[in-house]
Length: 256
Image (cartoon, rainbow, N blue to C red):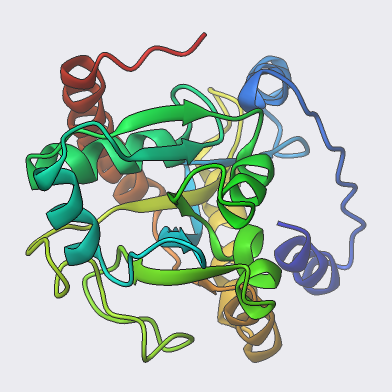
């Protein structure tokens, strides 16, 4: 978010102040934006939300360096041989990592045991320490641990391999054909914000994402910049909500 808003600030000739609002998995910050005046001067950056799409954040299937798993196929085979023996970590109940792994397990027809941590970073450390053998994680969370050899990235959830990791196979090609899981970072504005203001914000964000230096910085963090219109993101969000609502009900996922 900060990388994009810095470029927006330069393009607009106007300062943009970022206020971090932690708590309740982002719900506190979302509520603040929702209650703000719909004048375009208060916007929010969140994951898998509405309005204008920022970088796609692709999940990585990671395994402890001490585990025997070197591909999605290895994990699936082991889980089928001994159901529910294999634990996996996540950032908590209902977190993207939890949903991603349950989707993976459901699609593969296997059963895994969920071990929720208090955040994605703690879950990544748990994998590195071999407390749990596998997890889905974002690159920013596991980059340092992967470089140090404490865990290995054994698959990515994109349809094609990522240019940043050309040697890492997709989950689809290494054991689970058709599997794909994407999480977005988005920019939202309060309901009732005039269409012309939404259009201007959208244009400025898309312009910032297209800047070569911005793209380079985002790609270095494992993010793939992708702009959209507000309506395109609304439709994508509706489709995603329907898909995950069904999955979470089937898997019994509840946010506690």
